[in-house]
Length: 185
Length: 352
Image: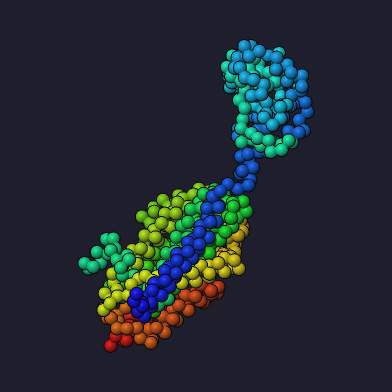
């Protein structure tokens, strides 16, 4: 086996050094460009105030039993009601055949808190804000909400029970952050 | 003539013939290009949040509420400062080495166009900040432009849309953005023109990679370091303090960013708002005509010419610095004397 010549060794050394320099230059350049670009990309993310407005946090632990909290979110009125045990028990025995838009109680209450109902306060018949949230409001025969426009009546779970409205009240996207607060969106 | 006509076509030498000649100042156009790219990128982000109907409030909002908004504003402010520094240095270098003669004449004219575009864009940027100085400067400029007779007046009316009011900044924002896109094109064009003007290398050419590439890389790294230091320790260096005041404050005298100051003081040479516009146009035309004012006929720059060019550089710095009107007039007149009287005489004498 022949020994490598001095020239070949020198050329080999140059190649390695040049490769290393190239690597260093490309890596340094990439890091530099990345460092410059990072704030520009970050600046296009929404700020904390924007996110806060987009996904508001609502305190629900201060809602009394059978009382409703009203929140404005994304141009909609969100109604949050804490049900009593009697209301829940009464809702359980309603047969599905008596409902216009059949849904189980478990589908209507919040997954993390069986006493909390969160609905969008918009009648599903004639577009109309609902009555039944404020203390003196009429709640109709079913103890929920009534529409002053077409006379539709909802029960405490937001299921339509009477009137021209075809569907139950819509449930917005939300999740419980802890047992006291939920976040919409 | 033929070579000039051919400058317009796409440059085929983008990779092959980029040898900058080894001098550090040969990297200035590249640095300017990098800074302009940064200005475009940060400007695009700022445009997302900017509101011309409430310019001052929008800048405050970007500073305080946008994620890293203060840094993006800093990119744009410091980037503009350094872009002008690079452009002024490049023009000075071309003056000192007579890089505007012969085949490089076309490149020189492009550099002067770039100066005009960047100055206009820089002024628009100053106005768009919605500060006290910018608001008053805009009032002066629109008033002056609207009193122009005939066709120029009609163009001014079209640009400003009448006397400066709530809608004016919305228009100027569009012009600022459109003008910002021009330099990228002009700078590529100027590089191609300069490259074509350079004589073909004799003997074996040196490969671009890695000899010259490392030079550019070192220059960019030095720029990044300088940029960072300026941004961190002197973010408002050379900026107009009046840009920080709300637009309803009326200052006695407008203070511009440092890169607009020499032009603003030069404009005071002829009194009146119309006179100011005339002086600026004359100054640009003088720079544009420099290849014809130079009578050297290909002779290398002599000692007297170089001395006078250095003096011109000091004169422009002093013009920006001087606050006394008398000094501004003296320095401003010297600018024109240098180009219109001394340059033809000295270059002709040195050519003999």
